[in-house]
Length: 312
Image (cartoon, rainbow, N blue to C red; front, side, top):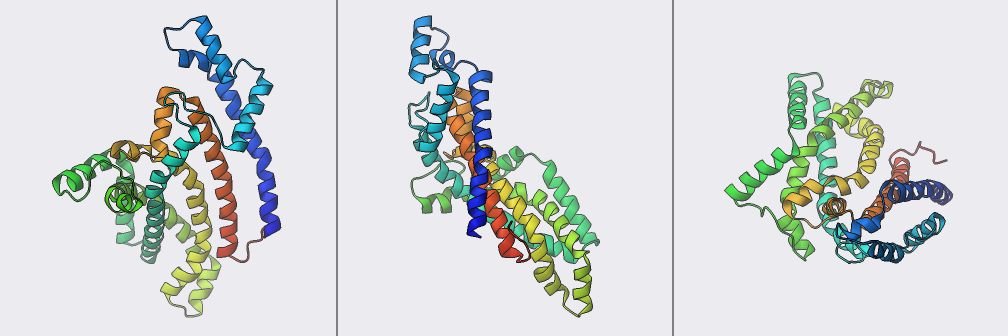
């Protein structure tokens, strides 16, 4: 196991180098000269040259690439071009609010998705099964903006159950007061596609020969579904959950924007609007690294769920 982990970590280096090269090319050749972005419309050649010298973009590309690699190795991407705040501090302070919403949302989405998929599989082909699939299709057809507006109006303004915006300094306060409504909206949006996907995973396994053998031995349908089918369907479910985790950090920007949550997603949108390249580059690299680490964690979870999986 340890040898496999070390080998996978070593194999990540070429992939990470490819990501670094791609980001460097995009921001230096395609993104244009950052000195003109910082100098603004009322600029002169002397000011632009001074900014280029301060940023180091007047150096050869090989030198700039080496500086970028050192920034990644030291976790120091400099300062934001707009706020002057250290990029590492921006990411460190924005990551907590995002995880406060996304971790409970992921756990609830996975739990309810699996439970409902197994429940629907019990009555597969019935009127209830078809009705649930129609409801999922309708739910997937509704924009997240509609969910946000309706939930904020009904649960926030009409019943006063949750605040519609705000964020505090205490984890307990945020988790119990400000995060429940965004989590509830995220769950309402994601449960329909998750249920359809997990249902397909469960039904694929329910039609396998080993399931028919288990039924022929006299095992109850509940035990067949919850023990035999779920264990084998867990592998694609783990793949889905782990592959979506890095994207969730960026994809939740609408929730963070509408609810005033100072998270990573909202910070990315602000950085793109302001052309704040240091923040964008740092988050791009970190998301790429997180994706590779989550893929490794998924492989280890395969082994834990199914001992027949060989890590080679």
